Length: 531
Image (cartoon, rainbow, N blue to C red; front, top):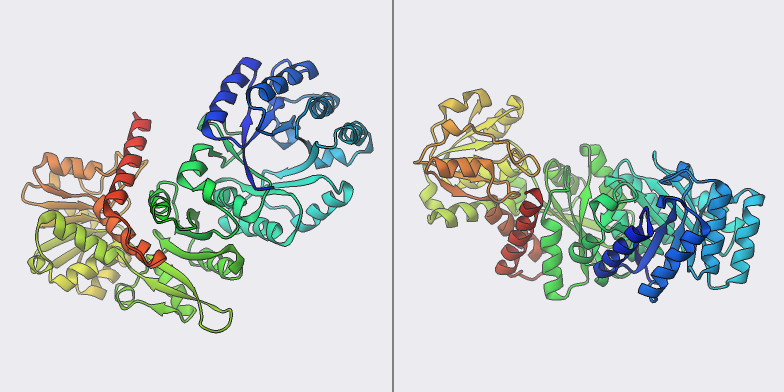
């Protein structure tokens, strides 16, 4: 059975359930999970009426009936025997699946009614579930085996919390190495990708809520997200994976941009947000997890804060191919996972597309050539990966650069590498620049009321470039316009560098107009959600 997108109906009444049902149907639900533990005044008769409503409204959509134990995430603490009666009556009423806790099923007295009901309805299936809301299971492989041994026709459902993205790989391994139907993925923001690639790996279902307010578990997507952002209908076992590595990453518009462009060229590729928290060690562990599992089909990554130097150094450690420009800059924002001509060993190629993206945004918006930047006094705020690429480009053009950074040691080091001046942030009142560039994440969504530069320092004879692209017009750019300064938004740089990455990923050039339209539309939706 192909992985289905299950949408929970977590209603407190039949009337509310009807409303949620209509919304779920319109959104593209492929299975409905009736979370009967949310119903007030719960009874067997009430659940039968709910199932009848669903079967009448959407007879082609299968049903999972769940009456969850409070200890495993149930909404209302219902008596155990009532919950068993609910499930057995649901099978008799035509539900395709019932979901019961493995721990409770271990008790023989709880098995009898469920086994009997299932024997009378051969088309019904039992899901035996267990949840860990704290972290990983002690031994997920043994747990899966124990469930299968207890009731061989049951579908094991093993859901645990990923406290780091590296915790997800045990779930991936289980799906890859076992046969038969199973439901396996991770909760929490670090487990997000496991919910999306569940379809590639063959989990029976993955769950998505009607909207943000209706989520029934931590990290649950809305049904709209896999359908529109993550190409749900196109995912199969052969789908090649890509993604953006960073922390934070939820704000990134790279997934919607690259996935839209993949769709445009008909490529069986999927681009994911990859939240890799921590530093070098966590990044290296993540990359090892990827390379150790070629069957995951990861072929390339965009890399953002704080891992651009880690990406370059990892590629070097693996004796990968390093683009000279990335070497010069000292940071990589793109990694390509390749196979060697002979053998199965995989290599990593590292590139930097920030350089060209930034320089193109500056010159095109200001209507100048790179040579015109010679001797320009330029202020760069920040000393991270984006700053490194911009400083490298401006140095090549002959600009006179002064770097301002909160961490003095880091700022001085970058300035020394490229022969620039340095000053601490306290010296910003004395800045004298023709071009001011924010290369930090200050002002990025959701912190849209922040700015790296007080308004009184902005002058009409300046050009102000903010590399933040979400929102397209940051507070810094708004205040620069008010001061009469020319402005350069981060959207231009973002699209330029993403287009270069897409070419590395696919060998094809994306459509610039499609890219800008995609990002502009998404930013407009975000802005509407905020108002």
